[in-house]
Length: 260
Ligand code: NAD
Image 1 (cartoon, protein in one colour):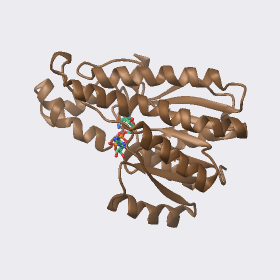
Image 2 (tube, protein in one colour; image 1 turned 180 degrees about the vertical axis):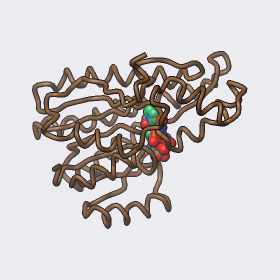
Image 3 (cartoon, protein in one colour; image 1 turned 120 degrees about the vertical axis):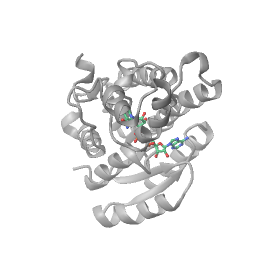
Image 4 (cartoon, helix red, strand yellow; image 1 turned 180 degrees about the horizontal axis):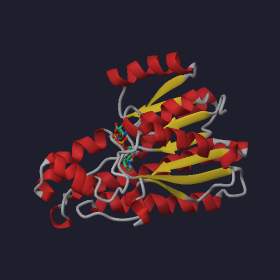
C-alpha cells in the first residue's frame, strides 16, 4: 500500500515507535529506525524486520535532544533514500513529580525530546516533501495532549504543545499534498509506562496494582491498555491516500478517556 515510501520513526527501538516502524515496513515502506546510538537491540531489529516484512530498514542514530544530530540524521536519509515521505515523531520520555519538586533539568529534557525534536525533524523533512508534493507527518502526542493529570507538568505541557505544532504544520502545507496529524494514545503497555510505576507508587502512596487500576487506567473507561500494533495500524492509515483529507486533527486512541 505504501510501497517504496521512506518513513522515519523517531525513538523506534521499542514501544509505540517500534509498533509504527513494523506496521510501515509491513505496508511496504523503507523504514528508518532511530535511537540515540546503535546497540544490540537495534542491530537485531535491522535483521528481523526486513526478514519478516521484505522491506529495507536502516538505522539513524540521533539524540532527539540535539538539533544538530537530528539535522544530520535527516540529511543521511535524504542522501541514501532521496527524502523523507512519512515522518513519525514518536520519541518521548516521562517524569512524574509535583511541580514544586520538579527538577529543572528534567523539565528541559522532557520539552526537548517530546516537543522541540518534532520541530527540528519537521523543519528538516518539509523541504523535500514540498518538492515532491506529498508527505505525511504524524506526531505521537497523548491523551495528555488534550487533558491533564497531576504530577506530569512537563509531559502535559509538551504534549499540548505538539498538538498545537501539528495544527500549525497542517495549515502551512495544506495545499501541498502534505498532511499533519497527531495520534493521542491513552495508556499503551510499553517500557515508558512500566518505568513510571515506581514514581507513581511513591507520588500516590499506592501499591503497583492500585496504581495500574486506580491511577493509570482510572480514566480509561474500557480498562484496557491499547497495543502498539493498534498505533501502527492507525499510522499506516493516516499515511495512506484514503486519509488525504485528514489533516490538523488529534485522534484519541484511549478507550474513551477524553470522552469524559
Ligand atoms: P518507550 O519508552 O517504549 O519508547 C520511547 C522511545 O523513545 C524509546 O525507543 C527511546 O529509546 C526513545 N527515546 C527516548 N529518548 C530519546 C532520545 N533522546 N533520542 C532518541 N530516542 C529517544 O515509550 P512509548 O510508550 O513507546 O512512548 C512512545 C511515545 O508515545 C512517546 O512520545 C510517549 O509520550 C507517547 N505515548 C505513550 C503512551 C503509553 O501509554 N505508552 C501514551 C501516550 C503517549
